[in-house]
Amino acid sequence: MTLTEIRKEKCFKAVDLATRLGISQGYYSHLERGKRPFNDVLLKKTAKVLGIRLVTLREAIKSHPPDSYKLKSWMSNIRIHGLPLIKAFHYYMETNGIDAQTLDDAKLKIKMKEFVEANIGFSVLAELSENKALLHHVREVIGTYSSLSKNNTLHNESKNIQLRSL
Image (cartoon, rainbow, N blue to C red; front, top):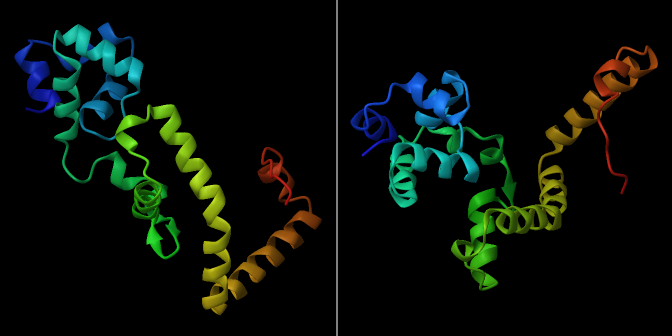
């Protein structure tokens, strides 16, 4: 059963449920259609307002079609050691005996961040070593930005970017 079906079964209009949750109808619509993820607080509040168990709500959320927000993330384009990020992370977790299901969201995020930090440099070097055209493109783009920076054109675009030095 989808979240939409549950909502209708409980006789809620989307706008009314959104109001009870304290969010806009547009935001709720994105949640219901799988275009945005639920956070833990909103997940619990939605289950309570609908009068359903949390596990039932989680199952309804999983029933979204494959074009949901999860697959449209920019992270789906990242590759580590030639593998898609999620697959490489899964392999790392498995080979280190870490069960993702036992970690809370915060710990899982930290594990993934640490994994990416430890491995992205190698992947960037490997890609640039194998793809000379990409390295040439990087050099051209940096040259363009350098000339824009000299003319102060780039200043407004970059003033809020903070980079860590190596």
